[in-house]
Each structure stands twice: as structure tokens, then as C-alpha cells.
Image (cartoon, rainbow, N blue to C red; front, side, top):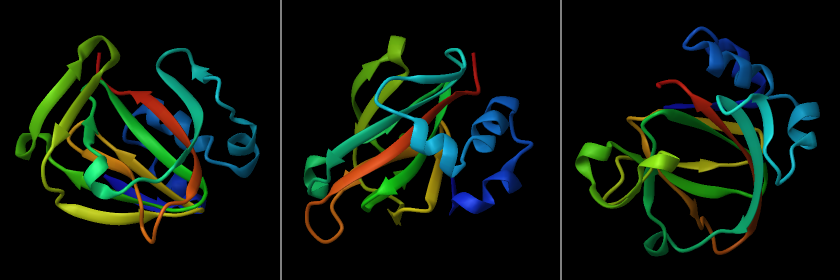
Length: 151
């Protein structure tokens, strides 16, 4: 997991070439251009999409993880709570291998608030529970990069 400020994104280059490409696009200009349609940077290996939704109570949320991709969550408007846990410590209740999606229930190990100016990188070993209310419901808008790091 990497939890940092957008302005510091380039300091995390060197982990994987696809991640480098995504980090280079954490700029106000690029982020403001991303809409609800997939913005491809390197075909299906690196792309970004904007999501807008209402935060929900923690008990209505669940953990998700991926095995081939990492996610970069970049908050544009609003704030949400996020929890991180190892998938090995959770109970899987759904999987869609073709979509690289695994859903879990259980207890988080780390909690954080994602607000404008923040980004969060979650690797395959980081199951993440998002969309959680902090001080009641609010509308959030964020850009999520999907970055393939394993075949």
C-alpha cells in the first residue's frame, strides 16, 4: 500500500513500468480530463475511470482485491473512509476471475481517510474496503487507475 499526496506521486516510480506510467498521469490536467468512459494509457494494462457515488455505512461495504492489477484511488471531491487488510485474513464470498475481482468480509488492519489531494495505491496483497462514510453520507468523485502488474 502507498498512501501519499498527489504532488509526491513521482517519488514512487521504479516499482513497475506500468505503475510509472500511471504515476506520471497524476496531474491536475489529466485527472480533470478523465470521465466515466475508460481512458486508456496502455490498452488494458493501464487505464483510468472516474467514479461518482454516495458514501455508505461501513457495515454495507466489503473488501475487494485483485490478483493481476493494482488500483490507484485518487480523490477529486469529497472524502471517504478506507480500510486495508490482507486477503488471507478475510473470508472470500465472491469471485469473478475473468474480471480479476475477489470480494471479502472481515476486519480491516489499517484505516485511513481519502480526501482531495490524496492518492492510495493498493497492491494485490491489499484487500481494500472503500466508499465508507466518515461523518455521514456525502457525494465523492474519484479517479481510479487500473494497472496490470502480473499476467
